[in-house]
Length: 422
Image (cartoon, rainbow, N blue to C red; front, side, top):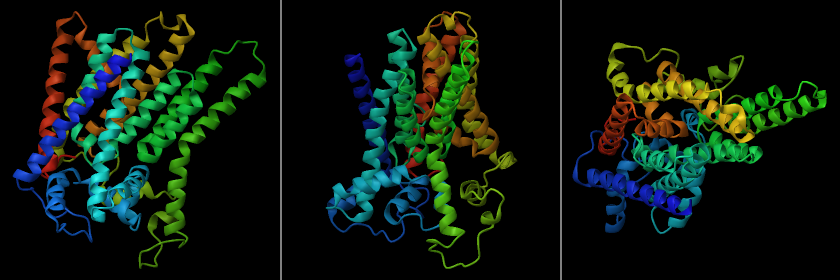
C-alpha cells in the first residue's frame, strides 16, 4: 500500500507540473483574451525583475473565481457578492501568504494560493488512493482510478486559485474515515469541506444515511434507548457538518441586516434580509450569476450544455452501473460489506444529486469541476470499465480517457488565457 501510495503521489506531482507548465507557458507567450481582471484592485505590477517574472508566469492561475478568492484573502468580505465564496480557502491562503513576506502582498497571495491548491491536490490523490483500497479489492483498478483523478478534466481548477483541491481533500478524508468507522472524525472533515464550498453541506447525507441504516438494522426487540441513541448521535453528526453554513449565513445577516459590520455606504437594508428565510448565499448567486432553477435553459447557453455533456454522460453511466452493483443480493453478507454498501450508496446518491443540481439550477459548465472534486465513485466507476469483458464498456473507457486528457489540456490553455472556461 505504501509503495502504491508513493506512486500515486508521484503521478499527482507530475500531472501538476504539466498543468502548471502549460499554464505558465500560455501566460508568458500568449496574450490574454480579457485583461480586465488580471490583477485585483489596489494591486500593482511588481517592480523587481524576479517579481515581474513570477507575476507574469502565475497570473493565468488567478483568473475567474480566483480574483474573488484573492480579494477575500487580501481584504476580507467587504462586499455582499463575496459571500458566494466560502472562507476556508482564502483563510488558508492568507495564512500561508505570510511565508512569502519578501514578495509584494498581492503576489504573495497569488503564490500562496497556487501552492496551497497544488499541495492539497497531491494530498487528495494519496487520500483518494487509500479510500479506493477500502472500496475495491482489485489493486490494478484502484491504481487506474487514482491515475484518472490525476488527469481529471477539471485539472486546471485543481492548480489555480480555486477551492476545489482543498474541498476534494477534506471530502475524500471524510469518506475514508466513515469507511473505517471513525464517523465523528469523518464529520469533522466534512465540516471543513463545508467551510470550503457550499455543496459541502450535502455531505451531511453520510451521517444521515448511516443513522437510518443503523436504526433499520437494529433488532426488532431493541429498546427505545438504542433507537434514541442512534438518532441523537446521527443528529449531532449532521449538526457538525451544517455548522459552517449556519455560521457563515449568520455572520452575513449580522453584517448586512443588523448593521454589525456592514462596510457599504448604503443604509437601506438588502431585500434578502426581509425574506422569511434570510440567506445571503442564494441571493447573491441569483443576483450576480443568475443562478436558479432552469435559468440557464436558453438558446445562447447551448454551447455550455455541449461543453458539459461529456461529464453528464460519464456521470450518468457510472450512476447506472452503481445502481446495478448496489442491487446485488450478496452485499449484506458481512458487517464490513454493509458499511461499504452504505458509503457507495451515499456516494452514488450524491453523484446523481450534484449532476441534476448542476444541470437544472447552476451554470451547467461548472458540472465538470463540481463533480470531479467531490465524487470518488466517478473515478472508480470509469476504472472498472477497463476491466469489463464487454467491448462496449472498454470503448466507453477509451472515450472517457480521451475526454479526461483533452479537457485537462485544453482547459489549462483556455483558462490561463482568460477565455470562458469555468
